[in-house]
Amino acid sequence: MVSELDLTQADAKCSTDSASVRLMKKWLEIGEGDIKVVALKGIQTDVVEMWAQAMRDKGVKILGKQEQGDRVVYLVHLP
Image (cartoon, rainbow, N blue to C red; front, side, top):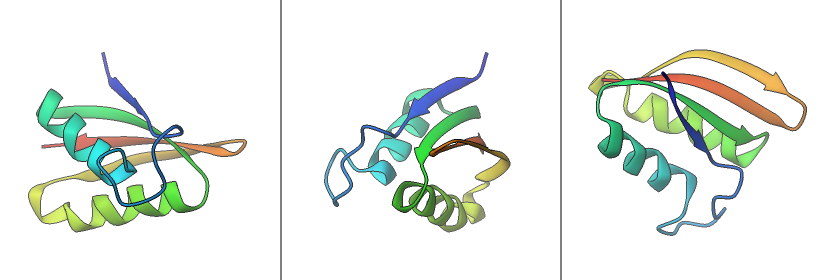
């Protein structure tokens, strides 16, 4: 079963509830595996893609991306 992280309620500012911090917390929580990340189009999708790019050398990969209205659902591999 793939874990899910819904970022649509995340704080848009740089805080402990920001999308990037939620991504890191989820990675620490589940460890290695695939995760479904739901993000709003715009800033949140930019954050997901920039975070995955920044963590690429650690083995993080975006395996898939599907647009669903005002949201984008990513399948992300966490090493």
